[in-house]
Structure formats: C-alpha cells, structure tokens
Image (cartoon, rainbow, N blue to C red; front, top):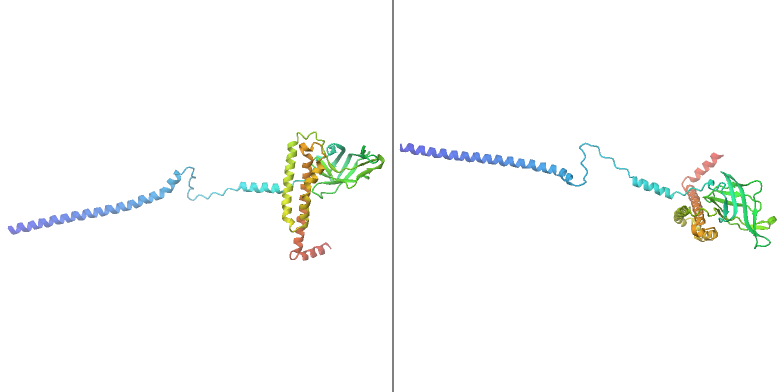
Amino acid sequence: MGAQGAESADFSRSARERGRSNKCLSLCCRAFYTFAMNWRLSLVVCGFILFASPARSQEAAPGAAPPAAAGAPAAAPKPKKAGARAKAEKAAKSKPPSAPDVATIDRRPLTLNGKAGLLQVSGSGKTLQVDKLRLAGESVSDPSQRCIVDIVGEKPIEATSEERPDGLERYQVSVPACPFTFDVLDGAVLVPSQITACVFKAADCQTSPGGLWGPDGAEFEKDAAAIGKRRNEAEKAMARALRTLEELANDNPDAASLLRDQSAFPGERDDACRNYIKESAYGYCAASLTEARAALLDARLEALKSSAAVKTEKSAPGGRKKKAKAAAASQ
C-alpha cells in the first residue's frame, strides 16, 4: 500500500508536470502565432499608409492640380502664344513702311514751304497731270522785286512715272524752261534742290521749285499728335536700316558711303525745313523729310542685299555653268 501510494503520488506529480508543460507549450504557440499575425498586419498597415500618403499630401497642398486618372491620355502642351505674337510683332516692326499713295496728293493744293506758289496734280498710276503750277521768285533785272510765274496754260502738263529709285514714287514734270522731278510723300511732294535757277525771260523772273510742297499749316494744330507719330515711326525705321548698314559697312564700301552721308542728314534737314510755316511748333517738314530719308535707306539697303546675293551666287561652285546654261537656253 505504501508502495502504491508512492507510485500514485509520482504518477500524479508527473501528470501535473506534463499538464504544466502542455499549458506552457500551448501558451507559447499562441504567443508566437499572435506575434506573427501582428507582424503581418503591421506590414499591411504600413504599406497602406505609404500608398495613401502622396494622395493626402497632394490634397493638402493648396492650389495643387488633381491627379490624372489612370490610363488617361497626357494633356497636350499649350501653344506658346506669347512667343508667336512676339515674333510676329518683331517681323512687322522690321518690315519697311509702305510708300505713300499718290491718292494723298490727288487734287490737293500744295504750296512751297506751306506758303508760296501753288502745285496741284491729279490722276493715278504711271501718268499724272499737273493742273496748276505757280512759281514765286525774284526779278532778273531787280532781285529786290518779287515775281510770280504761272506755268500751266490751257492744257495740263504731263508728269510721267520714274518708278521708285529712292523708295518713293517719283514723277518727271517736263516744263520747257524748268524741268523737275518730285517724290510723293504723305500729303506732300518733295522736289530736289535745283543746281541753277529757272529763268523765264518773258516774265523777267527767276525761280526754283526745289523744296517741300505741302499744306499751309491751317490744320497742323489738330494733327499735331499724328505728325509726332509719323516722325517717331520714321526715326525708328531709319535707325533699323542704319544698324543693318553698320553690319555691312566693314565689307561693303557702298554701305560705308551711305553711313557717311547719313551724318550730314540732320543738318541738311534743318536747313531745308527752316522756312516751312509753323515748323518750330509742329515739325511737319522734319517728319516728312525723315520719312523720305528712311525710304531712301531701305531702297539702298535692298539694292545692296540683291547685289551681294548675285555675287555670292556667281562665286558659288557651278555658278558659271548655270550662267552658261541660261545663256544657251535664251539663244
């Protein structure tokens, strides 16, 4: 009995120990399983946070653009309107101003320096007619005496076109005792200075038509802003042409000569406009002569460019062969 009691006591002890060990193993497995689950869950949560954080940051940024939907086509780049507009404006500014139309002087009474004589033309195209021509001058026998000569009789005098040698429309007036040419400006004509005076022996009068024939100044006050704008635009056009001439002057003697002549222009303009009516107040003559000078520079510049292009073509390889072929074809 004693042995059985001891044996059963040992069995009970061992059973309790196994139960304790089983409980410990069960608890350890559950803890391990719980730890693994927590680790996997943490990875999922962290991944979700990392994935969602850019969207939240973008939503939080003030003024941020909404994200593009998946698979949506990329937006086309906006056209550079500002750049295209700037190029167009630059091209427009660099383009030489168009020559004044003959219609601006058609049947309009013009006077030399706005106060003497009378010139009135009509027509259009290649042939105009001088309807009235009155020249003021001085007596041949007594220079202190003033005289006036009416040139046009019963029939108008023909004025024929000489094209645009200096950038403006030019016409030749064939007056027997006093032939002259004039360039058409905006509402005026410019007659070159005469080397010698025109002498009308029958009228005992000598005169010269050279100078600016334009309006008498009655409307200058209301046109003051327009006159100033014309002068400003002409000065800009002249400056553009001079910059180009300066680039050509090192290799082109004609361009260098034009630049030298240009230095004398301001003084010549002042001399020519000194006697124009109300010139100190409105500067009409100076604006007109600046337009004429800008047109002349543009015309000369185009001629220089054309000449340079021809020389380049001739000096290029095969240029002589092309010239020979063209000559043979013309025969």
